[in-house]
Length: 303
Image (cartoon, rainbow, N blue to C red; front, side):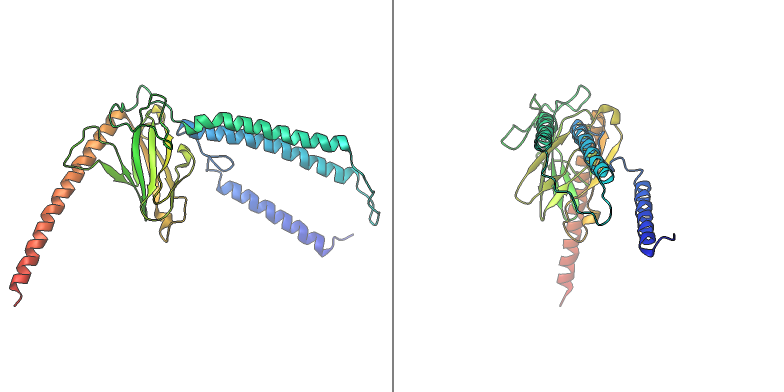
């Protein structure tokens, strides 16, 4: 017997869906976070990934169990075409059992989640190879969390259309020069507790470096906080991300990058930033004077 057109169309549609799914998996095979969050750059990101995988494993078991029971019942108790469905009053023990089972699963997952949250939210102390932040450490407040020893390298993250500006604390303050800063690339020392003050200058943005933790909104008039600590073995590596909140026409260009360096390299970076900024300010002052002189000469020559 030849299959009808409807059956053939369904088969073609199913084969097309499978082909599209396989292509999507192949296209994303290089992404390390297709099914789970990215991790490997900071302890808080690792804990987020571990918690996610635990919940995913339980969800897969529940899904397979429920769908397996459903298909088994469809096959086992199928009736002939035209038959009248049997009137079933239910099984009280079975209904109570799956209700209690679901509640127990939710309680267990909630317990694991609340047990893991402190390790995700609270920063860790700087390690022995980290940048020693003896001075300039901000005190704890109602919204800001610091490591147990109260010391962290605090960096201001300011979202602007369409760039991130990073302002670093100055270990050797100079009253004639502002704190060192950089754009797009945040340079941090490894094995160091990094706390971030995240804010926005104009519209809402979102700070997101996937391998270093979750997303944090940058909202005008409000300061958000997060932290990370990159292991010493990852010195020299960079972690990329971008603004995760639609903030205007050039939102896609608002990228961010975190570069991990040693403590010695970080101190050299701060010194270079201060030197370069000071040189740029002097050059701008010279150019401004030259422009004002030219403007004054032109105005004097005008009849």
